[in-house]
Image (cartoon, rainbow, N blue to C red; front, top):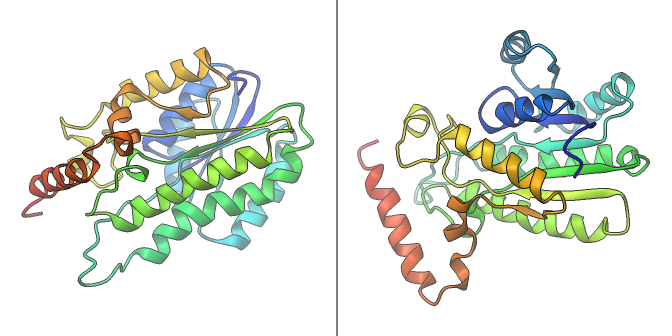
Length: 255
């Protein structure tokens, strides 16, 4: 994608990866609109980072997506890029039942698909446009403690590939950012302060460097995520899966 001169919508832009990528794109001269459900959070970020704009958007609500899309195209007719950073990640015991399943699927999977559907007619009319999805290393090596999250991210990877193929003869590029375990509050304060997680600033810097160095890249892979991304290529995938999940389960015992 072009890393400058865009008008970019960032869902999940009130915190974490979404907010930091929004700030990084704004620093490159892009017009950036952050979106999320909590207006107070968005207002605070816009006040703290002059130049950002915001829209209140619940990506789990199909009617809200339609409403906000109409507002966006009226307020920002040059809108030509969307970064789908909204996401939730919950631990689940499948012995009891995946109680968070519907919200997880609606946020992580249906939200990006519905928003893309709403924006695509407009994007196809732009000189250049981009859709940036955010999957996870867990799309390729699932974390058994978060089965619904891992499954939705695997689905986002598959969807991104299909979208890219269908748009191959258009001006709309499709990129997939694949984060590793990053220091954000996705699963609370423990993750945000976990020394085993990749520092958020380092992750953002590496992602932006890749996008600027290789603007045609289909998958944005920082070095730290590559063992997960390519786990299935190894002969010992079952052992890797077992070892990875045993380690993660042990780290969370007693929580």
